Each structure stands twice: as structure tokens, then as C-alpha cells.
Image (cartoon, rainbow over all chains, first blue to last red; front, side, top):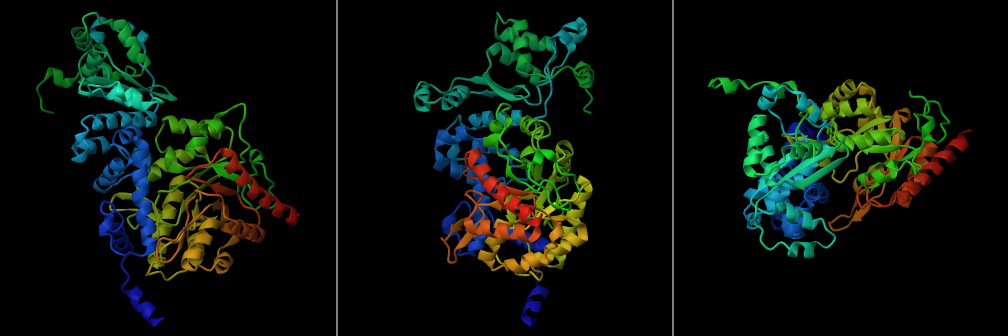
Length: 278
Length: 297
């Protein structure tokens, strides 16, 4: 009893205990060969932490994983987990930084389109988990006075992502979702053809991934850059001479690419009328 | 105390027993379509979800849960609140949990005697605590904060133990009993965890069951485990990836005979089987619950 009491007098605070314990959890994930002999119980916790976080990334990025193979992806996911461990206790949000990590990761950069495919996959998760917001009402748009319509600033829908890539990342992603991915992939000879993708939630219960034509891409890209409605429309027509504006807006509204009109959309930006840095 | 819920099935033979004294199953994404099928609703008595899977405010998963909750009683089981965190609870985590609880109005809300977070990092595991007076103060404060925020008592689950922690001065059952009397929380008795901790750490199950206050036990969990004998000492791992072991069924039957029926959940989280397999496991638990009811009437 006495020895036990002595030991407890030296006991660390709970906070100190947790800091020390945590320091050993992810330390050897990357290089198991350097692992020192540890209590089998500690090994259970280490492998539970590293395996479950790796699996969270694997589940979020299945096509990215298929593109590089299980072993390569597992090592990539492990590097990510150690560099960027989760901060939130809800793991569906874990992975938002993975596409940028892939873009900067030495071995992964050997597959130039990999980060953009990861962006597309993350955008689908984002679309599924974002609060429901309705779609742009085109009748309301048509009722605006001409001046107000011209000056209108639309916003990207909160569930939507607009991804511009120098690679055929949509085709690559799509091929991997087909039953015979290897045959579909074989048809993609040249990968460095630019593609623009819209990922969105066209209804409350489904997500959508579409490749945008140049006119739609120019219009939506301008909206995203903060352009007025008239300038965004002009950008679409400049990009695609016979662009059908009505059809394009109908298409983008149905996909919920842009938000419903709010007071904020109708307000003229202060910065437009002054050069104040504030 | 809530009134018996007629949707829950199962017999409530003791008015003090929280409803439903029935065996439910975990709701997992592979079975969403089964539960959404209006023409063939599976005969589950109640469903338990992992809270954090529905932390997106709005979004498709929340919508699915709301649709299923129209037809089944729901229990919300948190796995990441980290009641044992010395740094306190993550306010946004608690806020999202409260938002979900307010929306779903679950029959039960539960969490774990464990920690998962320190220094702003979430480790996604139920990590062990040294069970001593300082830890009791911290866990009590965290449980009280959670209960205040949720506006209702929670159940706290006994962990599966793999590691003997130095600096423990209180037994697990004593620690949990004191937590109950300090905070008014209830207990979620995970029979599989009790079995695993007894095998791995020599926890005395009879002493444990004799120590905890029987009326505090508001729910029982059952799950499968696996043996991991790669190390020096073989360990049982609480995998939630297999049928409930026969020895755990026997322990469950003795617990039900001892304490009377309690809402019981069969958990299965990895290698998730077809729903029928899961429902059959729950039916086996239901038969044990009903046997206990018959004996007592």
C-alpha cells in the first residue's frame, strides 16, 4: 500500500497524462520499423487510431485511391493523418485539406491530376453535408428591374463546388465509376485537356457531378469571382459565341449552382464606389 | 421516467424500467434503404445511431435520419464527446449534439467513460483514463455540463480495457457509482466491454455488478469481440465486427436476471452483415428480455 501511495503522489495531472499518452499515438504510424517494444494494450490503441483515420480518408476518396492503388494510397493517407490529424470529432468533415496535401506531396505529385480528382471527391461529400438551401427562382429574376438585374451579384450555392482543372479529371473520375473501369480508362489517352466541373446538390436527397461547357463555366466562374450579372452573362457569350443564356441559366438553376436571390445579392458593393481599403 | 412507447414492442414488466425494455439494433448506412422502404419496414423495435454521423446541420444524412425516426424510436449514442478530457468539452461538439438531440427527441442519449481529444486533436478512439479523484472531478464536471446543455440526463458507458493505467486509485464500478451519485447520470452497461476488460485486465465482473447502482442502468450493449494474440499477452478486442460470443450471451442473461430487463442494443460496426443477421441477434436478446419478464410476473 505504501509503495502504491508513493507512486500516486508522483502521478501526473490528467492533462499531463493525456498529453504524454497522445504523443505516442501517431508517432510511429509512418515508420513501424522504428517502433519500440510497447505494451500490447498501447498497441491496440495506436493501431485503432491510425487505422481508423486512414480508413476515414480511404472511404472519402475511393477514386483517388483506385488511381494509385491501395498500398500507395495507404502510405499517402498515413502521411496526411500525421501531418494533419483531425481537429473535429465528426469524421465526415475529415479530409477537407487532403486535396491540397495531395497537391504538395512529393510521391503523389507524380500523378498530376490526382489532387483535382481528390477535390472532386471532396466536393461530393461537401454537397451531401451542407444545409439545404433552395434554388434560384428564375421568375423572381425576370421580375427585377433591368438596372437591378444588371447589377445583381449571384453567389455560388453553399452546397456547390466549381472546380477548374488543366486535366480531364471528370473523365478520369467518371471512368472509375463504371463497371469496367480499366476499359473506360484505356479510352483516355491524353490527360492534359482542361475540364471544368460543377459538383452540387440539385435536390435535397441527391448530389450531382457534371462537366460544364465553356459558356456555363465562364458564367459561373464570373459569378464566383464576384462579377455583376450583366458582366457574367457577357463573359459566357464571349466564351461561347452562340451561348443560349436562358437555357444556361435554367440549367444552372436546376443544378442549384447558384443561391436564391437575397438582399445581399441586390446590394451594390461599397468597394465598387470607393477605393477605401476598409 | 418516460411512458412505455407502444411502437417499441417488448413488454415492460416493471414500471421503473425505462422504455423500451426491448432489443434494438444500430442504424448503419448500408441498411438505410431497408429502413426507408415503406412497403417492407424491417421489424426493428428501436434503433441507435452514432451521434457524430449526423452532425452536419441539414444535409442528406440528417434528412435520412429524420425520415427513419418517423417510424422507429431512436437512441443517440455519442462516440466522440470525450467526457474524460482534462481540457473540457469542445463547445461546438456539444452544441451540435444538443441540436441533434433537440431535433430527433431520442429515447436515450449516451456517451463513454473515455477521452479522445487533447491539444486540439481528435484521436478517434476511446482512450483509457486513470480512475482517481482528479479524474472523477473532471468527468463529473463534463457530464454535468453535457446534461445542462442537453436538458436531460445521459447514460455513461463502461469502456473496454486493454491497458492497465497507473495512477488509478478507484475501481471502475466505484468510479461509475460515484459519477452517478454526483451528476445524476445513468449507466450504459456494455456487457461485452465488461467481459473484455475482465479477460484483459482481470476486472472482477461479480464485484463490478454488485457495486453499481442497479436503478442507474438505463441500457445494455451487446457486441462481438475478437482475439488478438499477436502480442506477448493475448487480448480480446471489442471489434463490433462479429456475432455476440456465447460467453457474452450467458453473461447478458445473468445480468438481465439480476437487474431485470433493460433496453438492449446489438452493435455491429465493421464487416456489417445483412440486416436479417443483425435483427436475428436482436431477437435472441429479446427472447432473453421476455424470459426475464415472464419469470417476474
